[in-house]
Image (cartoon, rainbow, N blue to C red; front, side):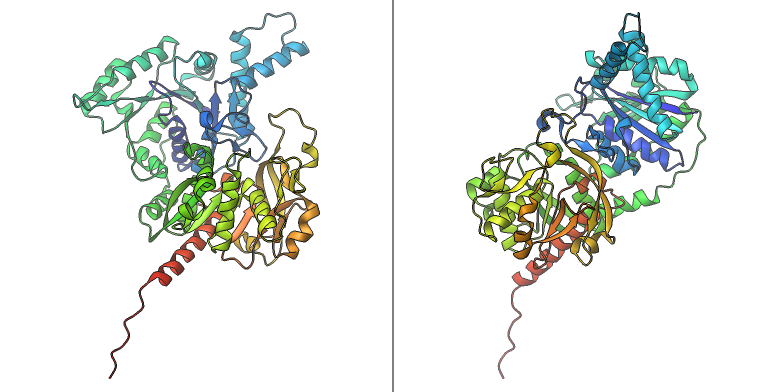
Length: 551
């Protein structure tokens, strides 16, 4: 029988429920338990696909093509398991499903459809479906937002009911909260957390565990105070201080606080010794790098780095694989349009252009790619980063100065990037792109094949446009290698330049499959090339040895 751990949050948003849930998943998996993990987002959007990055951060894509919350990326990276559309539920999905059932007349014929029981039953059904699909011994369910949000009320009611239906020993509640520190009086204040728990209790949920975020370690008296006022055993009040090293050190920090053992006791699970040796090695390699490289990430959402969260993490993974610290220089592509590429890229050891949409800052991205190509700086392009690389190559090398993408200039005389045939007449935007995992065949002997160590791969996609096949012959005649295609050969998936130290771009999003313990081959290879570039630059800049004195 599946056990459930419901993770809620209070006081403020953004205090780390997602990382806490992901870390708990890692710790339970290290103890040999089968894990399912689920994010509930109370917003009315059906999914994250159409949400503004400034509001929501990146859209994380699963193998089955779901456009999900970025927390699913944390889940996959920490638990090291591929997730599916079952792991992300929104209010839009729940109400949409209930309305369809009402219209069909099969489920609610003659009934007044209400929040209780129909909406809450649908929520519970989705949670159990996810747990069953993964044959989970423990299902971790994170409720987005904060307790008291009007949007989240049906979800809190649903998880309250589940404890009654599943049995007290089969469900527990973990509440992540904040204890602020006031510098003016030098004191940790527990009142916001008390109010947060009071709000949770007012809807019938008594937390079993408190994960308390604070700027400093909670003294015994503060933990005791929270225990008394929140009716939580003092040993279940966990002090969670900000980790200075990396996100990947958080599971180890929570393990030192016995969090997984506390959950196991609450769920009447056997206490097992965890095997965290692999995770410890990840953290050791991160904490003790042998070198450091600087990578320029060129995009248009540089003020909100969560828009490129998986890319940032994948670069870190590439650093861990090479025992190197990766310093990311976030470069606004519009700044390059204004000041030129050299002003921002002359001191970096690699350039990456991530995915994106829209024409804002495009010329800056193209200029960054030109600079990397001509200066022999390692380059990695992702999705739009492939399309802009093709545009740059056609303009600069093939001599077609007016070449462009149909997305940016519909009447371009040289449309080297065009809409996929199945996308030409699509009017609905949500969930209609080429989404999810698709196979790719690599050219034998290519850089891509050497990096992957295989010729047949599968990667996750999220795009509407592709390289125009009418220009493929012209591209290859001028030295561009199309090293990866769809199995039928009709879609360009990977391009590279063989006469460049490292120049490769892909139509897919490899960042979604990168893990701290298994860096994606493209990112591992990219960071290795950046280290070689650094070594070559360092050697070139070294002063000449003193000439021997004449006899």
